[in-house]
Length: 102
Image (cartoon, rainbow, N blue to C red; front, side, top):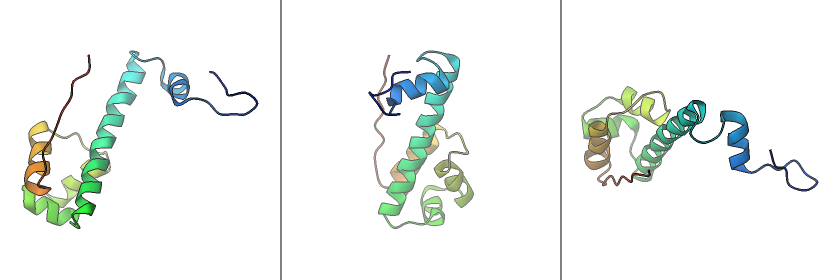
Protein backbone atom coordinates (compact mmCIF):
# COMPACT_ATOMS: atom_id res chain seq x y z
CA UNK A 1 0.00 0.00 0.00
CA UNK A 2 1.47 3.36 -1.02
CA UNK A 3 1.52 6.00 1.69
CA UNK A 4 2.02 9.68 1.09
CA UNK A 5 5.41 10.96 2.29
CA UNK A 6 5.53 11.37 6.05
CA UNK A 7 1.84 10.82 6.83
CA UNK A 8 -0.74 8.08 6.95
CA UNK A 9 -2.68 9.06 3.83
CA UNK A 10 -3.46 6.21 1.46
CA UNK A 11 -5.13 6.52 -1.94
CA UNK A 12 -8.69 5.26 -2.20
CA UNK A 13 -7.69 2.70 -4.82
CA UNK A 14 -4.91 1.38 -2.59
CA UNK A 15 -7.33 1.19 0.33
CA UNK A 16 -9.82 -0.82 -1.74
CA UNK A 17 -7.04 -3.11 -3.01
CA UNK A 18 -5.93 -3.78 0.56
CA UNK A 19 -9.41 -4.29 2.00
CA UNK A 20 -11.22 -6.08 -0.88
CA UNK A 21 -8.49 -7.25 -3.24
CA UNK A 22 -7.55 -6.11 -6.72
CA UNK A 23 -10.17 -5.23 -9.33
CA UNK A 24 -11.56 -8.42 -10.86
CA UNK A 25 -11.25 -10.59 -7.74
CA UNK A 26 -14.48 -12.06 -6.32
CA UNK A 27 -14.34 -10.02 -3.11
CA UNK A 28 -13.70 -6.76 -4.99
CA UNK A 29 -16.50 -7.53 -7.47
CA UNK A 30 -18.88 -8.15 -4.54
CA UNK A 31 -17.87 -4.83 -2.97
CA UNK A 32 -18.35 -2.97 -6.27
CA UNK A 33 -21.83 -4.49 -6.74
CA UNK A 34 -22.91 -3.64 -3.20
CA UNK A 35 -21.57 -0.10 -3.59
CA UNK A 36 -23.65 0.39 -6.76
CA UNK A 37 -26.76 -0.78 -4.85
CA UNK A 38 -25.91 1.67 -2.07
CA UNK A 39 -25.59 4.53 -4.56
CA UNK A 40 -29.01 3.76 -6.07
CA UNK A 41 -30.57 3.93 -2.61
CA UNK A 42 -28.88 7.25 -1.88
CA UNK A 43 -29.96 8.70 -5.24
CA UNK A 44 -33.58 7.73 -4.63
CA UNK A 45 -33.51 9.10 -1.10
CA UNK A 46 -31.96 12.40 -2.16
CA UNK A 47 -34.43 12.83 -5.04
CA UNK A 48 -37.35 12.02 -2.73
CA UNK A 49 -36.19 14.58 -0.18
CA UNK A 50 -35.60 17.19 -2.89
CA UNK A 51 -39.24 16.74 -3.92
CA UNK A 52 -40.34 16.96 -0.26
CA UNK A 53 -41.89 13.50 -0.36
CA UNK A 54 -42.08 11.07 2.52
CA UNK A 55 -41.31 7.42 1.90
CA UNK A 56 -45.01 6.71 2.20
CA UNK A 57 -45.94 9.39 -0.36
CA UNK A 58 -43.35 8.06 -2.81
CA UNK A 59 -44.60 4.51 -2.28
CA UNK A 60 -48.21 5.55 -2.99
CA UNK A 61 -47.19 7.36 -6.18
CA UNK A 62 -45.42 4.34 -7.63
CA UNK A 63 -47.55 1.50 -6.26
CA UNK A 64 -45.27 -0.02 -3.66
CA UNK A 65 -44.95 0.10 0.12
CA UNK A 66 -43.19 2.48 2.49
CA UNK A 67 -41.28 -0.51 3.86
CA UNK A 68 -39.97 -1.36 0.37
CA UNK A 69 -38.85 2.24 -0.26
CA UNK A 70 -37.11 2.23 3.13
CA UNK A 71 -35.34 -1.04 2.34
CA UNK A 72 -34.11 0.32 -0.99
CA UNK A 73 -32.89 3.57 0.57
CA UNK A 74 -31.08 1.66 3.31
CA UNK A 75 -29.49 -0.84 0.91
CA UNK A 76 -31.32 -3.78 2.44
CA UNK A 77 -33.13 -4.89 -0.68
CA UNK A 78 -32.28 -5.84 -4.23
CA UNK A 79 -34.41 -3.93 -6.67
CA UNK A 80 -35.74 -5.09 -10.01
CA UNK A 81 -35.02 -2.84 -12.96
CA UNK A 82 -38.72 -2.52 -13.78
CA UNK A 83 -39.44 -1.43 -10.19
CA UNK A 84 -36.57 1.04 -10.21
CA UNK A 85 -37.85 2.53 -13.45
CA UNK A 86 -41.38 2.82 -12.03
CA UNK A 87 -40.13 4.54 -8.87
CA UNK A 88 -38.12 7.02 -10.89
CA UNK A 89 -40.77 7.63 -13.57
CA UNK A 90 -44.03 7.54 -11.60
CA UNK A 91 -42.82 8.35 -8.12
CA UNK A 92 -40.15 10.94 -8.81
CA UNK A 93 -41.13 12.16 -12.29
CA UNK A 94 -37.66 11.43 -13.65
CA UNK A 95 -35.94 9.31 -16.27
CA UNK A 96 -33.40 6.54 -15.75
CA UNK A 97 -30.17 6.59 -17.79
CA UNK A 98 -27.91 3.55 -17.78
CA UNK A 99 -24.39 3.04 -19.01
CA UNK A 100 -22.41 -0.10 -19.64
CA UNK A 101 -18.68 -0.45 -19.04
CA UNK A 102 -16.76 -3.40 -20.41
